[in-house]
Image (cartoon, rainbow, N blue to C red; front, side):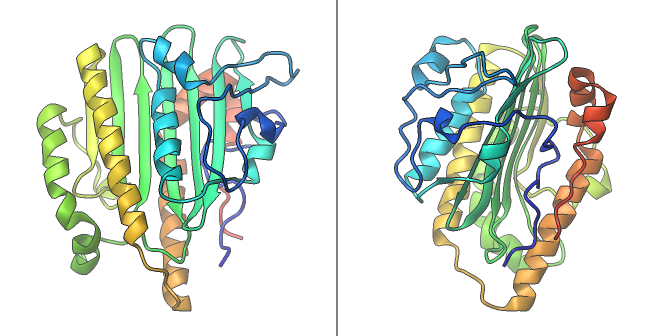
Length: 294
């Protein structure tokens, strides 16, 4: 069942990313990813080659690209990944300062309608990671979401397995996906400070194990964050492995509607909009509104 347009991310806009040759990933469709190969991405003039090899990432002190590589490798050990049609349209762009790099990767899999990442690296040490995995509507899996904003001094972090349905009213759904993950949430609630008050509207879209935190930049804190990302993503992939396909058309439609509500909320409330406005200008920032339902 297809119920989404090809631009489900609040960051996805045809005006943002240059036309890309899918071969820049160094990957083959439906085959094991060779993520140690050199991956290439180009700016709009096709003139700048960006290395995304795992070795290159390890040489940097701190880069969210390490998490992207981990997630792709982990996913591909459980299910065959294929390039999404989005990858042929969106790859990379340099912001108005001609120094800040924006990169996007998009994949799909038998149970995943879109696994995508947007990473931004600024010359002043600013980094942004927007990584998400959206299940196909035949599966009521939670949505994996990592929204990280980092500067030289501060980090603002949201990491969650966002529930597709209301866990306050549907105890069976809450138990199905989160009961066994509560110890994982408690582990990181002790390691990372709570980020502050959330609106009642936001709470509807967060799970009992949400990591919402603000902390100062340090090697130790970044190490904890990277560990949390890996643990949460492995938990999501294991849930995916165990998930059963829904055949009831009405339930599939409900799953579609639930993803639509989530993405609409993201597009309206996402704090990343201000970052993108600063990087690309008012017009491009406005063009990133979600348009999902066909």
